[in-house]
Length: 254
Length: 264
Image (cartoon, rainbow over all chains, first blue to last red; front, side):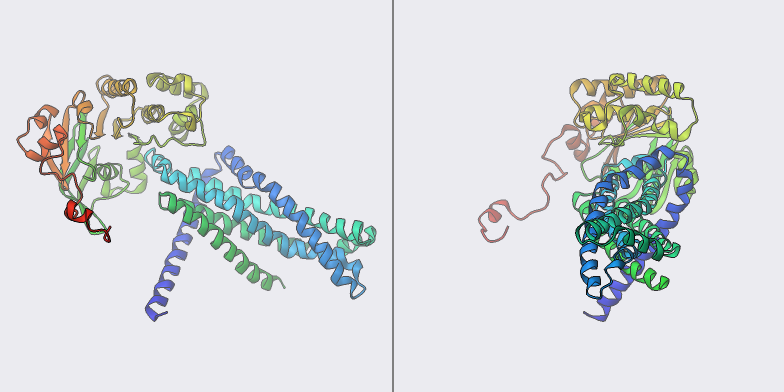
């Protein structure tokens, strides 16, 4: 790859980052006026959160069960199977719940947001609002952005709880770890800072995933191909950003 | 009401307008006609400040849109209504809420008054009974009529129509034509209609402009345009394929290309 191509990519990256940053500022400025229509916000929390509930609960259960199996197998080699509750709880709260919830959110709610807003652009609905002197950022983008940001920590909490139950199901019911030991170990080892780590990660992921989804939809070319590509970009960009930010945040907390 | 003064506008180096001049006078119905690709929709975007001229002035209500702040442009837009070619109804709310949308966004009227306002506009377009339907349940013509009700619900001074007659059945077409005329005569609404439905327009418009090659090729009453000696104007008004305006996109000789098997 030539130096000119490298600098072209770099310039495009900087331009894109700048455009997203400006969009975020405009979006945040519209969030306060958008609160005047609480019904819209509640509808978007339901769209982003309520409709993702089944997939989050199922995934949480299976991830917890796998954690129970793998954790037990590993810990029993050192005769420490009693620490299964601790391993499962910390793994879920600090790492697996926020990351997997965010990845699932990007795939389900993020794509839905991008394609919905993109199609609104393609069918002139956003332009019609502008002509009616209504800012689409306030009416369309801000409630969806806030809905995603609020839904993500709630979904993460549900993922953690169901996941822990799944790990307990395998560890206690199947592998025979003592139930009292499982829960008391969990209670003793999990501190507020562990919960905070998961919470902060989920809020950051909520902001990033919702921002990317809304931005891509809002700026999608008004064609079938344009909306399709924007939806793909939402998943790819969100996934990469989630994993990158997860590393940075984990390094910061440790 | 709307005045375009020596407007130049280009997209990606391609000149759309090269010194466009046009006036839509208060209380009159002005038609902007022209073949596909003449820049009719671009002109509407200039008038509604979705895009801005490279040079020249676009004046709406006496003020240049290019020199206004966004809050001033939004204030200007509140005095306009626009009917989109595809209706552009909001698909996540029903017909009633679509028509009520601008009222709820811009006023604090009590719900009872909003209801009366919306139902009266829906009655005017014959769709009071469809108030609870979702936009996806409407036919194209019905969607256009709901969009018209939404465009007039705030009683705008200027109404802009983008291809209002496309895809309408004869009954809906007659109703829409009558409505445009009625709103003009009874309420004094200034109307700008962009269309190439020459016959329909001729029955209601006061002034008409024919766009071609980035400029106004002809202007006057529909009758004057029809009797124009200009061959381009005559070809457009009579809908003939033969004339100075080419129907075919530039291409190599037809017979030669047909017998060249390898080249598409």
